[in-house]
Image (tube, rainbow, N blue to C red; front, side):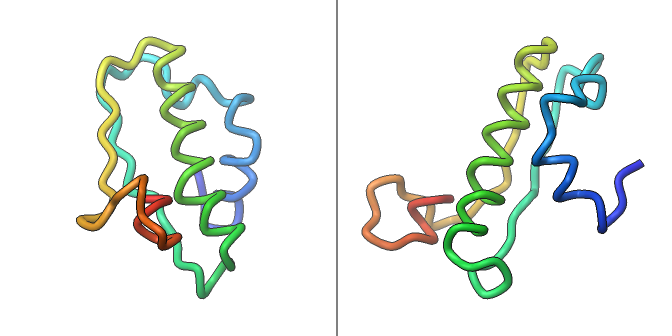
Length: 86
């Protein structure tokens, strides 16, 4: 079971926990934070790196569908950090 105080540890070491994703065909991800709580680097780590890591691991163990709830303003080509990371 994941608790608030060990979520960061889990995502930092996600490759050590493939069993969390094993056996499910569909995963939903609603993970996110704010720049105000974590700064620009932490925001990128949570809203991009952790999510990409989870999706990669889910795919490795056979997940067929990984759904991400992100942001209406997501734009990889934006000049602004928030929509670019989303």
